[in-house]
Image (tube, rainbow, N blue to C red; front, side):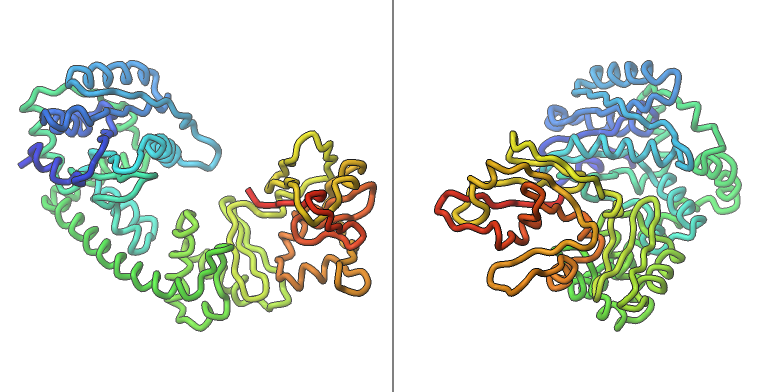
Length: 436
């Protein structure tokens, strides 16, 4: 039976604020009605409507949602998002991502977001994932509870049937809006819901129960896989740069390698790679010769290796390369494409007199730069110095070189030329350089 207590029991004991994702449709209206009926809970509730601007009546729906929320005595918030489709992007995915990004900004610690997804939604999600060839994590479909931003996202109706929700809505005389796009079978979920599932449920009436049970089994299997992956991952993951130890990765079985690469992508908050992509990562990058400089690049990330490390970047570092820049010294900070360079007072470094009386340019490697270092004989090529520091080739092109009056005086915060180094107490400057 669908009751308010069933929803309340899903809330953590320390819940501060409760946000209800309120589309104005039947399911979210039922969730709002259930929770707002509890007097002690009502002051914590805010009904949140996301206006995607995709329908002609989108603004009217927002007004409807505001009216319903106020009639229930709860706070209301409407968030407008840009969910317009771009080339090669799924409108469903764009709209969903826009919603979750909006919700994420709302939640503080101990706040919860409640979604009204139910058992049929879970069944649809599992089947869509199955048709896409998803692994165990995808087939686990939607979790009842998960983190979102600083708070939690909870689906208290996930084991409730659509029939129970319909019965409640009719019994309590609720009024909701119907999104006409729900009838558009160009969307995968709508096609499945409108054309396929009615026929399947004629043959197997309890299909939503059995498929949801399969999702729970997959979720349990995924948790076991994740536990194994975490133990293996801790041995080969470098937290400082987010890379993996290639030699240790190669010592694992093929299945363990695949498991760890998926876990790695999850850690980096990237979309799960397909099996085909994982094989390419292993064959073309992981197993490449140490002397090679392989690159596997997609729209969302690029994979590189250097010596015994495997790297994954959301943006190819080489895309951040830029031309030389003049530093007018009006500010102690210079914003570069992918990093920030700043200057500060120090007891050792470049003397303030030289710094103040020089024209300063920031340049980047052309390939033949040399620098003289204190305590070392002769001049040293930057290439060899970078190799000594095990700095990957793609990072070297982004390291700012500081020129005073046309002469190389310093390399970011790594080295200062022996020709410029000084130890005048409180009369010097040093550099700080960090990536954005």
